[in-house]
Length: 88
Image (cartoon, rainbow, N blue to C red; front, side, top):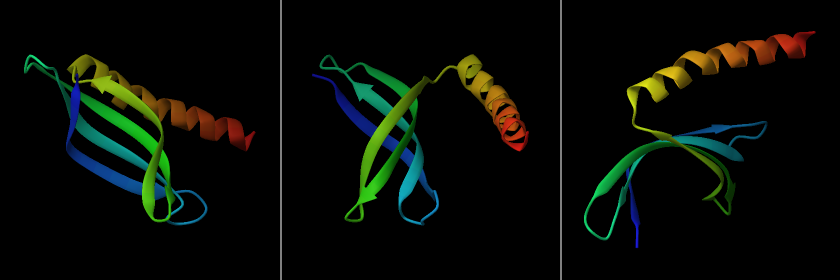
């Protein structure tokens, strides 16, 4: 059985109503039965239900420098294109 452990997380609320939705970035690790570990990064979105966070979608990223650099480079570019298309 695999056990998951959150090492660190940062959560930020967003949306039209404060405390309604959140996005979270975290460092995690998966621990196998044989004791081996696999680290990964995770981006998750969710909402609050009775002030408790409920996760809706999760996206994991390997702790590989090329993979992370690609996301850091391309995400702002894609966001700018999205903003421009909304303005047209």
